[in-house]
Image (cartoon, rainbow, N blue to C red; front, side, top):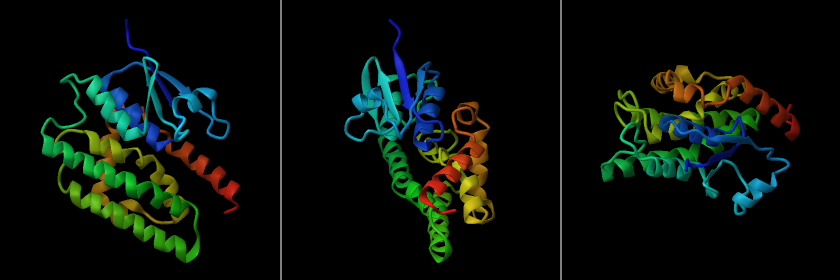
Length: 220
């Protein structure tokens, strides 16, 4: 019997994008169920009762939560040689996890700060954000991808934020590419992959989402 795979997600979610990319990389067919995070569905609350957040992957009725955990699960369960997401070498695997964890700890909060502040606080938030990305650009160096020649785990962890750069630049009034050309070139390289471009949310849709979010917060 074929595996039943369901993804509980929200279109503009950068974290959900990670899972969509991983599923696409493995060629896994799945049912997509868009979630309303204001009025959370009984299914979401049942499948992720601890955090009540997306994404949630439901594999043959069993839920897996937290985006990076899900990506690793996908790599382990559908572990064909065609497209491994994590290296086979233990040290390289740990290295990839380190950078994915760095992204998780730093990027989201930095983006939210830029999108929800003004004045001096915004200027400071922009410099913090650029500093975080500069560390990643230095790690990337002259490699095509974070793992070397092949798109893999650390790339998936970070590229999901790239469609938020448009909103960040517009509301922050600055250019990421002028400060971090290698990192932006890497993002464009990733977007040339169909598994990435078709899995990420549209940057204009993200921008519209941010406009609504800022209005709700009374920022405009």
